[in-house]
Length: 412
Image: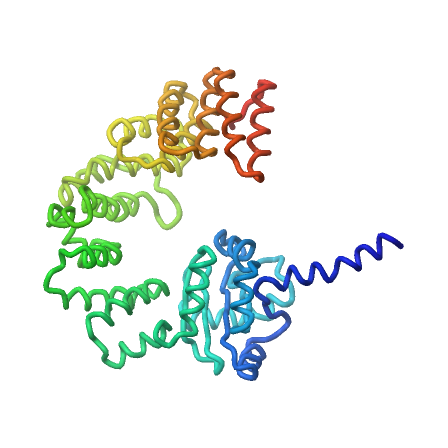
């Protein structure tokens, strides 16, 4: 009886905790949601998500439950979550939204997740935003939905009505990108660029850089043909990096797969010859990076360990800490050649040269252990534990326990 009383006493506490975040409607149809918003004169917030989307799960677990977020949304919005994929585990509520969800996704071109749709109290779409973010950024997105000067669809309507002032075009192009309306974003961005007499200002180069995602974009030729002028504005080597990324995507990676399936035995020589004819400065590095990505995705560790060592020898000085750690961990877990593992030790050590990231230090300790330096490995793994957050400490402690027992901490 005491246990039952205790559980009943906790119910108000659980209810209060749940109400601190966004209150999402349940058991209502889309028509009922719209009717409720109209009756209460509130906007509608629709979280469009899928079950497989990591950023969607992050927002639901970490941002939506925040008291600050709940206070803002619950006062201004009727909120609803709409699952846009289907699974065998879907409950009746999810299934009841299948048709409306599919229609909404099609009408508003929902292509990335999470996508947030915002509707006025009368049911008219006024704003959209995408992606995971921190509380401050997420609240700014929601605030824009209630401000006619910032609402994306209000800006788009003005543009379609003929508003073409340069500042307005710039603002609307950026809003379109934030809304992931890429077709409108590129079109409006190009119109803004055409109004500028001097593209080589910091603001304009930053803008062009943001909207240059393929070789067909206007900015690509600017970065390709005028690297010195661009670099003088945004930093040495930035134009090369931009062009390299696009060349890698279009001229290498696009030739390595048919849809999601990787091709077998790529003709690297033919690919390099084709790239060299178009982009001689970027060809060698693009091929080197493409090989690393191909063999890693293929899980062909025999070839991977050769191409990663070659790539790092030539371009390792350009690789950032996160990528250094990623490469080092991949080699540690998968590559059988200890010469390659020894190379990875140096990459790993460089990854935390200017920081004390416990995950990077953990990688370094694991590589030392695999190389047989147990005493040194334990010292570094203990440092990782001391620097880790409370919820990470157990994982690193488990690694220490394995090391002390002489057990493997890697797959192969």
